[in-house]
Image 1: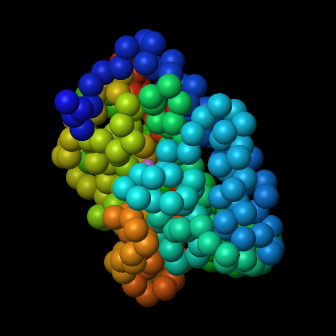
Image 2: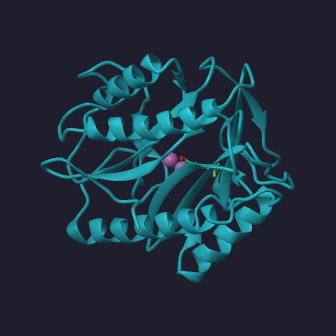
Length: 256
Ligand code: MF3
Ligand code: CO
Ligand code: CO
């Protein structure tokens, strides 16, 4: 029986996580190079899927709870799980591309928010804040600490900038399963939440909204996965890394 509970990985399993996470980072960076005015999100999705196959991986999102695409591409007010479509990216758009690769039974998950051409000063600041929010969250990791330590620092930073964090969706345990425990919130209290266990992996993926933290839910045909848009239709930005918890700290795995 497979459990959602995090179990410390063996050295061999850690090596597999390093490999798949590096692949996920390569796919994300490769795909991001094609962001330009006029490209459709379906075209970006195909680029990601083709490159994933070319390096010997599979796109984990395809068929996940009926999800039909290789990536999630969330444009402007889409918070996450944006479904690639015939939408043409235009100058001034921000778009999060979220790539999860599977290889040798392990998952690597990462995302970045890209800009198409020149974007507004506000969008620039929001994207910059989302990146820093992720890094500040990662830096708050201590082995045998708590997920609330991560969320506390993330939310403090974001709210001081005048933005909000999404509360209901967040990071997750990852390894032999795509989504497991712990839940890694972008808000919280120090010393609360779930224990951070050495030699396990999870993602840190705060969603940062320009306006309100609430969102509306939308169906994806033939899938139980939903996508979300900010209630006020203002911008949302996100970055995601998969990290390995060590006995002395952490290692960011989704780096080329
Ligand atoms: N990669 C997303 C995450 O960060 C999950 C996407 S699941 C999908 O957890 F089905 F929508 F692709
Ligand atoms: Co994730
Ligand atoms: Co992801």
